[in-house]
Length: 317
Ligand code: AKB
Image 1 (cartoon, rainbow, N blue to C red):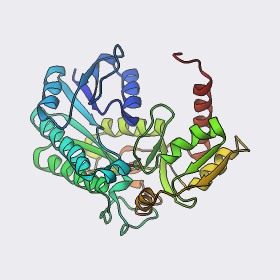
Image 2: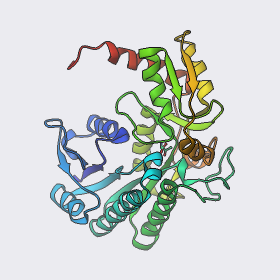
Image 3: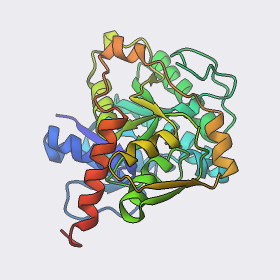
């Protein structure tokens, strides 16, 4: 039985994906990997620097890997701060993973993003196939990554699958360096201080998804019948679309005294203004049955409950 390798396993998506896969399958089949030192004693962990092809190769050979969820990447705001590093991590890492996948017959998951679109893309109900001319280095690596996945699928028969993920909201691991991070920070600040200063303007509308839906989407697309997949680059997926002001209203339904003010970060604001306001995810629904479960109301209730529970939990529990 082949094993599954997750790169970037200590990141925002990785930490929850590894736990979900270990619950779903035999835990020993899931090999977590990251650049950082891993947690001891919670299932197999291997240090992998995706910039080093032989480290990926070694992990794939040693653990007889059949599927790679390649999550190691820089997010949009950090990538804009360090565009050269972003190119080398996001593109170099994906290229190395695809090359190993080609040689060893692995299936590959690639996380694309709403960042793969740009200001010339239709911003509302953004179609599956449309103009992709992003103005950020993050977006450039996402579009190039999508094309590379398409190429490896068509040219070498690699089983590549991907999602254009919106902003992800989670109470487990912090995102770190994204434009949509406000939608996570706001919950921690609301529970602790009943106040949040947002770095995006109140009317900035973006697509979002609660992490349990995102994890399910990753697993479902990887388990989908390959003959039904029309797209090997990445599928639009979404669950909700809201502005900071609307999210603040949803939080106020639970914490009436919650207050929000705004101190706009021009870099992240201009990134957000170049992204879609909402995606059309019909292709994902038709091809592999994608259906989100959490809307803004359900997500907000669960995020507040989970964040409050963590705040009051004794340290180490
Ligand atoms: C980011 O903000 O960079 C990510 C994304 C939408 O790709 N969350």
